Image (tube, rainbow, N blue to C red; front, side, top):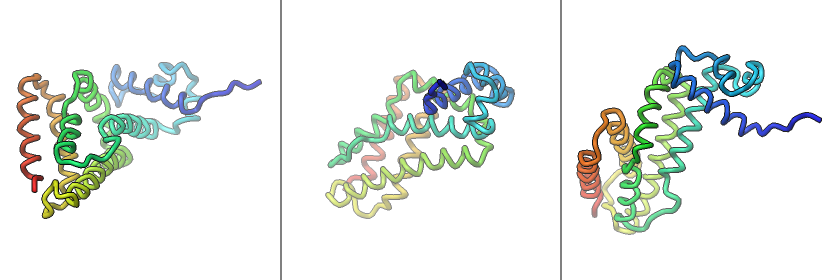
Length: 197
């Protein structure tokens, strides 16, 4: 009887192996055969799931950003500016583990940003975050919590970019808790003042 394989679990196993190889050998040096070995697969089996290293890397980036999206996307709409600001604070308030993962992401997968597919995947992530912010802002404009003269789409995407910049800045430059918290407080105050009706 043929062995039943959970294809999604196998893809995750391969992507985790790829991340290990990229971290230990560098993105350019890692070969598909290395990834297959770490995943405990024959190279031919690996190619059944991913036709190329580029395809594997694009899937890996998509998988990583889906995880981030699940963490930072609010599960429900909020009815007040204070509630919205609390969501932004939560997105900015990264753990030490997230700081390390963010730095590793750029060190390991930075070279993959030469791929149009990877860039499109990351851009799509920020489009979705920006659109979610815009939708939340539109609701807060309707309820009078946020000023009505803002461009919700541009503001939503700007807030997404600001969060990304802050989190990346902390990860790449090793900002300590006290300094980062002061920056976070200032950033939240600026956003709130800019949105208040």
